[in-house]
Image (tube, rainbow, N blue to C red; front, side, top):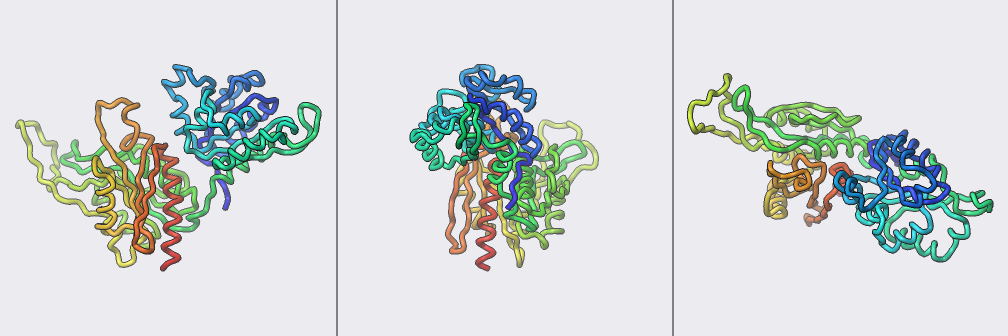
Length: 417
């Protein structure tokens, strides 16, 4: 499988060593591969190269201080930890490796490393004697046991004038190694349809019934599926989001329009993912002229909209179906009921509570947020149901994890047919 850094968020940690000058070139090479790069520097790193260099190259402020009030107010260590798809430390010194292995969190880089659920990799760079020292090798073993990927080191001449193992890998080699962490192709050639966003149900020419769905999760799912090689058709309600690369987009407005768009093409789809927050009801009559305010109350008669997900799952030859359930209470109970009642293969559920008075910090997941949490329930071939929880993370990160899980269950189901 080929790897891709397109649209990936990489947090580059730079430690104090002469190889830090190579990290400037590394920023450029990561960007050339399609990644967005932000940089965190240790105090020692700033003795070798300035933050201004990395700011100019990355286009973002460089983060250096764990207790910087301004940085914490904008994007502190927790938000940086959530932002990253990959935390890459290059160069990683013996001191930093030891501190990471111990689980230290007394500087910004270590705190981010400890607080993140993203993929993690380090590229060591140090004198060959330091690299071979038992203490360093113990740190290396501990980090590997924690799931940290090690890039290098290379062998050759070193700044101290000696020769041996401990050189930082060249930037191009590090970029290639990073790409291998993001495997693509697990859905290669598979046709996949996703619905995303809200639907608007018109009352009159200026008013409609809608919900708070932003479409962000659905679009992230479409992007993640395309990264994995799927042929993606995205049926989008009214949202203001750019179309992901290599995705065919069909815009709709109402639930009926979304239903019609789905049913016209569903027979050719192998997988159907229903992330859209489709309106359950629509006005029985849409007025052709604006309703004028003439009374203290107004009554609307509502009709039930078609249940797109249930109709797709009930087809004679249904695609593999993943539904979403946004609930305000009893999340697991309602999700399992929906999974069984609609005969789905998988369902991803999350708790939402939208309050227009909430601040950005308070509204941290679900509708309109860049973050989410998910409980995912999957039917196995033996009719058992497995459960997996995805903790709070950026929707892009969740989407990639969920697409990977879906691909696993999809291929298992195909193998048992």
